[in-house]
Amino acid sequence: MDSAETELIRWFQENPKASLGQVKKLFKTWCNAFVLEPNVLAWTSSGYSYERSLVKRVEPFFDILILKWTPGAKAPYHDHASRGCLQVVLNGKLHEKRLGVSGEPAIQSTLTPETSPSFMNNSLGIHSISNPTNTNVFSIHLYAPCKHQTKFFI
Ligand SMILES: [Fe+2]
Image (cartoon, rainbow, N blue to C red; front, side):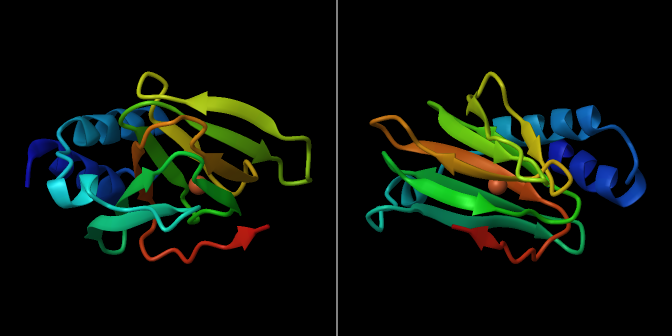
């Protein structure tokens, strides 16, 4: 286990109320050391959606998943684990639309490696993510706590 991972686990074990900025920094460091394996690069699209795979589970604190977004892939509006989701875009860009908890109009933003990590939780509302580009985009997501069953709102 490398030091970034140790620090990330320690943050969730010992500092549950520490700053979001701190955990964002630790997660970014963890993602910078992540290597895309050939089998992940070779994932094929199911036609309209995205591929996802569990990279790391640290019970009960968090799950880390790698996602591949083929051109046009879209995740419908969905909720998140109770402590939220951190997302790092590894290449290219993704498009995010957010709806507030009372159904306020969508806020749209572009997620890139430079703006990562972004954070989302249920107190901010729900969001949908899509790949507006012509190339595959990869992103890494941390969900806390682990084993969240995502609810989709179509
Ligand atoms: Fe999400």
